[in-house]
Image (tube, rainbow, N blue to C red; front, top):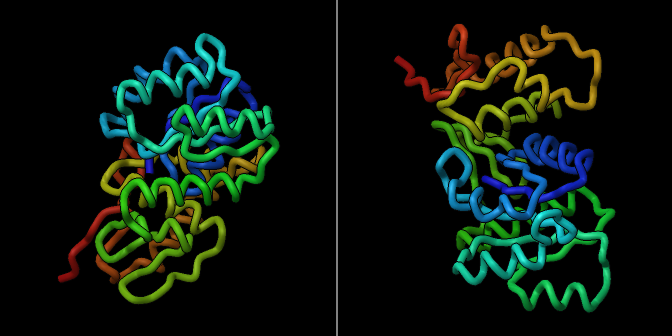
Length: 228
């Protein structure tokens, strides 16, 4: 699921982008309201965004104006407002301008993830959006991996690494990207930690019809692997 995050507080924006990516979202982050329309037109890697997380206090063009402009252009993607202005009048005005949901700062990350997933699910008309690679599936609602009909029992680190790989299945993920997204809460983590995680995941996926393949100079790719 592809998210455009418009937030001008640098520390909050960096943290949110990293945290949402660890939760299985693909995030593009910008800090100026004037850039939103161009980013929506370009999409994430050429693919349209599934939702916009919009701060109201943006420089260049504030969130209210951004919201009015994209709705005037008939942009129908879900928009979740993030703001420190927690008042009934603010909520009513943004909903009238076309917002789909409203979350006041400070907020719990788990609530933001749940609201985003619900917005995207409703927009897609699907109750259980999933990411998949061959027989491996990740349910973004239950936050569980299944392999065929079996639920995979994974440690938090293993699940975080596999989420990064499945959301970019068929594309290489570098060692540094895995370090940044899986071990973002550790400052002195060793690069070898990635090898340990991948070894464990490969053992769990062995003989399943999906594998993690190393492409020298590119990174690691989760891909279907038909069994003989």
